Image (cartoon, rainbow, N blue to C red; front, side, top):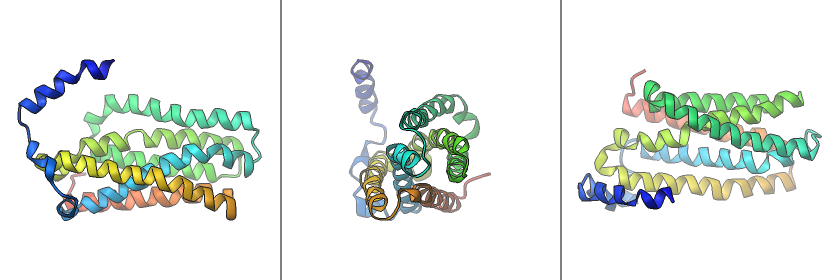
Amino acid sequence: MILFAALPLWKRQADGGQEAAGDDVPLSQAVKIPGVPFVLLAFFGFCALECTAGLWASSYLVGERGVDPETAAQFTALFYMGETAGRVANGFIADRFGDRKMIRIGILVMIAGVALVLTPVNAVSLAGLIVIGLGAAPVYPCVIHSTPENFGKENSQALVGIQMASAYCGSTFMPPLFGLIAQYISVGLYPFYLLIFAVLMLIMTERLNHILKAPN
């Protein structure tokens, strides 16, 4: 209902003619913009980690750590609650710290959460899921919000769509891939699988910042 009520605002924005020319930037041209391949890989890694973490948490906790199913389900829910709470908090502090710093902090917190999941103490491992959720909170909105600053307002509309397409590729294909790994190798590889994407995000976003000569 709120979205439908807000439709006139979108029309007003379109009538203002603000950088509508960026709509038709083709993919072949967009990926040639300095830094775009890095942000696409980072976004791919983020959604791969986020979706795999949530979808396979209970299976890992029950099958590998021996946690009872009820507790595993509760802490999987807390993963999403942590992300939701982090998104709310992010709205109050993002302007103070800036998108790039919030993205860096979020990724580092996610890596810390994965490290907690790896610990042999189940209570700490369960808490790690909440930490991953908190860390994930600022990444998606800050990447989208920083697009005009990073790549130009004239390209931002097209690049937001391309970034989201890359993100959805991560969320679509990487959790099922882990399902095959869990079935044929071991569900115990869950935290290591998450760590691969967390490190990928960190490397790609730092490469992007280097290209853009981001201030500290």
